[in-house]
Image 1: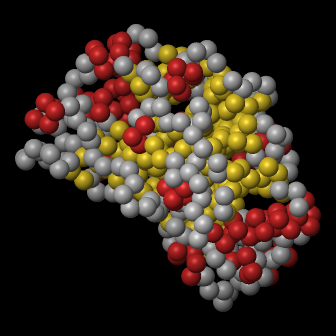
Image 2 (image 1 turned 30 degrees about the vertical axis):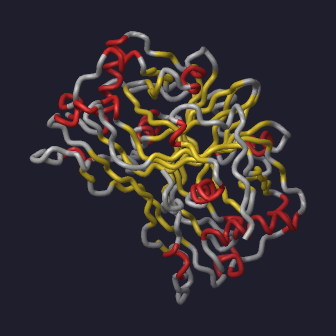
Image 3 (image 1 turned 60 degrees about the horizontal axis):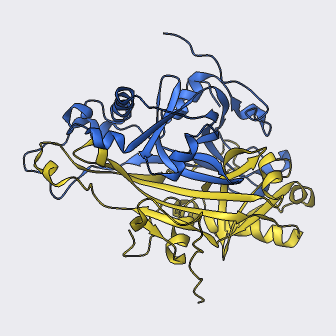
Length: 229
Length: 229
């Protein structure tokens, strides 16, 4: 197993506020990326910022996302311009004894760079297979095959996991020392993302069993390496 | 009760992809905003996009967020520049019979405009109280009071709920007609955000009861007006 190098710390990727919460190692970064399904993609049009939520997946050293070839977001971000991809998981609400020290527990990754459009149809198809495999291993082979027309109408792009940072907060409140004597409840309300029982489509053909992989989807799970945060 | 006008549809706020999923009415927009705790704020520095996750709250016709006065994000967005605030809730993963028609159920709002810094200390304090009240009504009065120093060190800013859009997808997969005959499981795996049982701080003084409001936090709940999506 090759160990990927840490994220590149630059003027824009260095965490300045609360740097003790920052991490740049790939084990932490990948664990956060692999726990999510929605990212927020930032881009600039005519000097103004846009933030679009979209599904993403990681494969190796790249983060991918996709959509209609007609999407303004995808046409913009594949045009050799700077983009920012942020993935955030809320893990808890931290109740302190003063308003000031209230906080949230979270895991987040921000990446900067230029996204590349995957032009080669075979690579594009492989990337889409990775997206499906990551959520539901085995499903890709069960599906009706992707047509050339569908593939043509889909833009897939990728951003290198290179320049960026992770930020993690865990644990309870940190109060001012005298405030520990106050009669105020303090602690954490955990927040988690859970998958419910699968709901079959009303038009599902009789006799089709619910695949096991549906009960194993791990989106939102905290898989941070031990000792992080 | 005054009815707020719909969001302003502009070149940048008009939903172009899948416009049937778009909404601009304030009942839908406010329901989505009031279900969230984390937003993603987009801004531009030296022509490059930045996306920062941060807590937010709505009060009336404004969306607020806050943080350290030293935060680069807050110093930037309060400088009379365009910002974009996006709130996204993932409600389900939609499994279709082809890869192409897979989708997600979600509720999202994107707002555009210029954020205003709340300068007046009394207004700032009132805004912070609204943040606490919104999550945990009654808690503000229990807390150690905010000091002048803390208030001075905190920047609070607000963006008008004016130019923007909501986007909502609900329901099952929509497959190509011939694909309904395939032996492929199709349906939805619901995704939800849940609050766990409160975990008291290790240094909590004995005899302090867990406040009832901790069990009523509604972050992530789908409170969309009936008939939406």
